[in-house]
Length: 206
Image 1: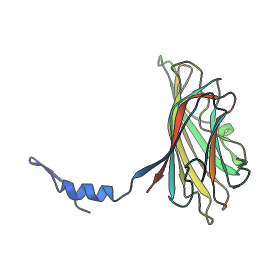
Image 2: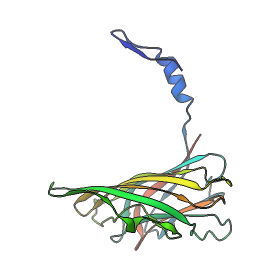
Image 3: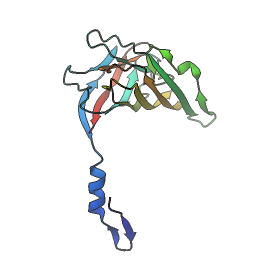
Image 4: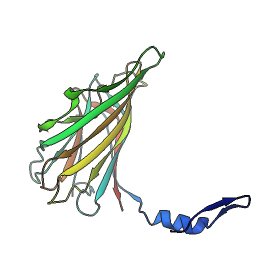
């Protein structure tokens, strides 16, 4: 890899440096789902142009202004059943959340064991709560690693930023689907109510 040298004449070897960065890979757009009073949004491999197989070893879901119909947690689960897509894969996770109030009167860094999953099949929360104000929403991303491996468990990491009343909250979620079966579908939903608006995009990392 070429080195970049900074001096009074600017950047040297920038072209070589750029080539090295480009060779690291790129995000390939796969599918966008837009919510409109939706009870769930599901990405199923092989359906409606969705790819979630061994084409890529890393997949990224981005969340853009997810708005809820009722104060609720935004959550997700996976399926390793190619036929019924039951979204009940066993998982173990960990969650922590920093928060800060708009008027500066309160702040916290919170680990809440109640948000974790311990060999459970429930949907994993990606937020403590999202409130329903017209200007309130959630954005962020979820990365799923090598979902088609039949050797290893399937790791994932998520980070979300959302409004909970007059608090700014930043969710950090990580864990793994404890299965060596391939994960072929991912579903998102609210713990109650619907996803009123917002979109989720799926990318493969080449």
